[in-house]
Image (cartoon, rainbow, N blue to C red; front, side):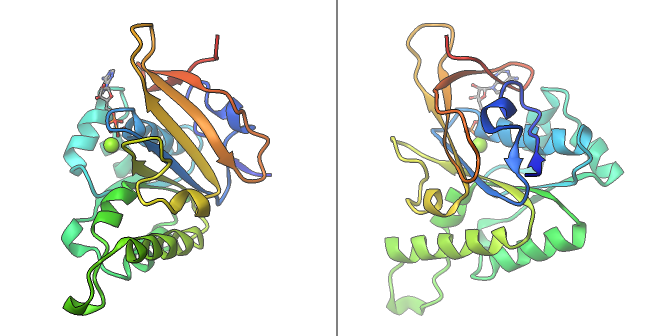
Length: 230
Ligand SMILES: Nc1ncnc2c1ncn2[C@@H]1O[C@H](COP(=O)(O)OP(=O)(O)O)[C@@H](O)[C@H]1O
Ligand SMILES: [Mg+2]
């Protein structure tokens, strides 16, 4: 099976070498757990180390802020953009329509991107378009259906994707449905117990992969570092 290595310290060994090529993966966790940094590193390493062209779609943060966050770890996205190996694009919440997935897939195909990040799909879910007019209120069912269709369509692009979801409790995604559709599910928990570590990562699911099932402390230093359970 072909793998998209993340190059994230200590991570690839948990998933037999990387994300299966073409798979759709969810990374969920509370705010500040390192999801965006993880996703930036996935795209950066793909372009800088593994020759895989990457697209980072941000809905939550501005392109400028993301580039500044990345620069803190020495990841120069401006230089990757100049070389044409990675790109960060922003989708405004106002522009989210029913066809958002088709638009993204067409950008992926035109640009020849093989890695894609959407940060975050929670921002997509919150802005589920109301295509039924004012007669219907957007309810949980519409949001779930919108997310279901979005992920299924994105999966057809063939790119290896990483979708970020903001969670507030013990759930794996904010919409309650993406964890069922995605091939892989990673969860990060924030739990400061006064020890050396306060963030913990676990692979909850990865189709067709004999993955690790432990909870691992993670550290944000030169990017993300996943440690062995001790
Ligand atoms: N340069 C850095 N060194 C160490 N930790 C950092 C650095 N920059 C940010 N952080 C930590 O990472 C957190 C933000 O990570 P981020 O990936 O944006 O979180 P999420 O996307 O899960 O909300 C910050 O709250 C801070 O704790
Ligand atoms: Mg974030």
